[in-house]
Image 1 (tube, helix red, strand yellow):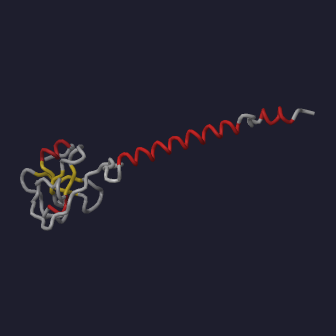
Image 2 (image 1 turned 60 degrees about the vertical axis):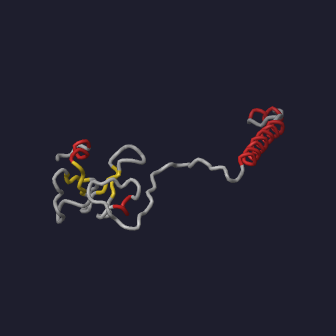
Image 3 (image 1 turned 135 degrees about the horizontal axis):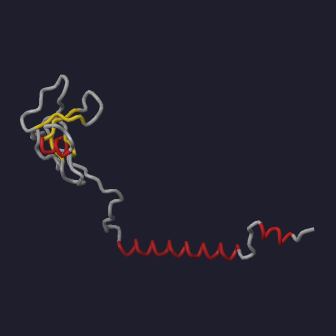
Length: 139
């Protein structure tokens, strides 16, 4: 008949498991203690960096900007059309006022092209021809 201690050892149970468990608990509690001391040192008024940084425009009281105007600060609330598009790969710049175009809408004025940005009836917007050309559109 096989030795029970040998069978348990082969199954992965170790005789020094309580020691390893205690060591892990000690390491964890030491890490928590360091975190709490750091928080006390920084104080409650210390600003914490944002977890996710994203562009959040501040709403304005009255829309005053027309097609092609920069709407980075106030977003759609700045645009007379209520439509502010992000046309840049930079997080906080490249926002411009636009408007709907295409079927049933007014055509875009000179210097702008009607571009499909979303596969829906309201998914066509006027973009400056320089932006449209960079996006692969035909001015």
